[in-house]
Length: 228
Image (cartoon, rainbow, N blue to C red):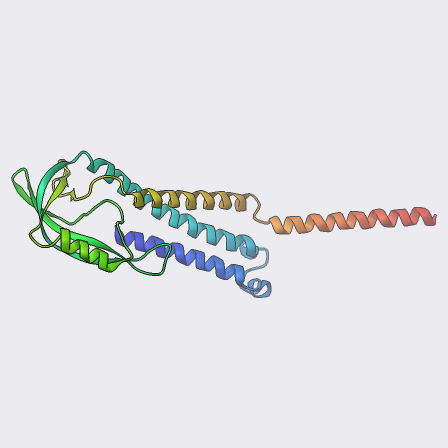
């Protein structure tokens, strides 16, 4: 699933970059790249479509990812609590949406027994509990997740191989979901507007030309009537 998310966000980034490049190209260069009379000859509309398609795709990715965390987080509050033993834990580096600086989260591995069978899991919480402070994360590992430490795990009775140490819906899942919904709503709004008025610039230009021609014709008619 993480690979699919990576591919999706990569495609979204490429679309937005393509839209930015299309917007920044000079008009003469754009004309050489597109066929005259083609739908894509309208540079502003094409650039906007690329940008908002990329934004919408990233919104879908955020929504899908956060929806899964929200659903699993809510369900985990009804799971069965049992004792687990930490086998080991490590610090994992993750990227941040709003910053180029890395963040860090805990990835514990713990074992437990449920219905007489042994299981191993590595989910701390359903949501990205990351911190920009690596020392703080490593200190928490040393204090709470050193090998052999007893912890409380919450096991999914319908699928005992699935467990979590911190049940509930995390704030990050709600924030990312709201952000994804906003991205998707803005992109749909703009794409619908573009579809309805793809050649808006050209239509407006033609309308101004016609208005200018009508005014010139009226002025000429008045001059002729005065001369007569």
